[in-house]
Image (cartoon, rainbow, N blue to C red; front, side):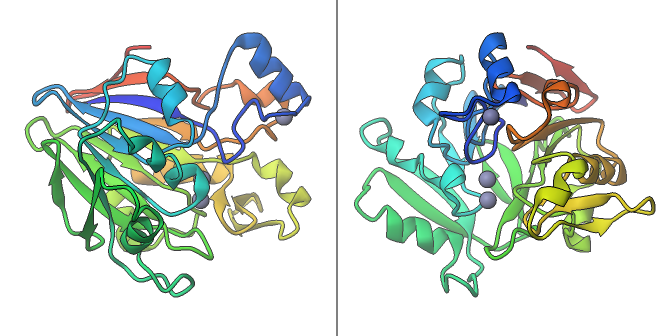
Length: 283
Ligand SMILES: [Zn+2]
Ligand SMILES: [Zn+2]
Ligand SMILES: [Zn+2]
């Protein structure tokens, strides 16, 4: 399993357009990008690849990396930064299967799969495939599960992607607070590589109108507002899940400049190989 982090930023990305903050300025100086979220997972045994989330930065991501165009895709939830790159399928794919959960969202009264079908009904190049949460399905030779996470007010899903031949396992938190249900934590556990939403450090919770929640024993908030984990929350979850390697993703330009380029915050273009016995970083 080869994993390329195509987009590692939050919904505005880093640098954010029009922003002159120290972190965006330093990102421009270093030539570093955190574009809108997307992960490319290649099965080198079958030479197929799976795309997790369709970033609005899809075109730039595929022009600036060696990632092959995907054979299939999965959408975690319907926010702009994860779904609205799907229009790129037009005239690029003959037919792209798009997998999503079938759970009806009480807010939208639609499942993620239904919303995709409705919003992209003009796009005859995609086929939306519904799935029950926790039910494993096969994509590109991998066994995949959608696991419910906590991203109010919308439903959202994390993912487990496993190679049944090698035992390699990639887990993604999806966009989520720290308050992930216990059965989802059990599914996400023991990954070789864990990609965790860590939008800002806990120190910034005081600037959120809702503050933080899910405090640890030291009083550190593991959730920023209600929708995303803090860096501290993401690292605490990674430890609980016994992840071999963790990269923090979906990070915002609000990280202070002296923290924004520190490990283990991911940047676009990172490339990993998972062979079932460990993780190698290729670039
Ligand atoms: Zn900025
Ligand atoms: Zn979201
Ligand atoms: Zn997002």
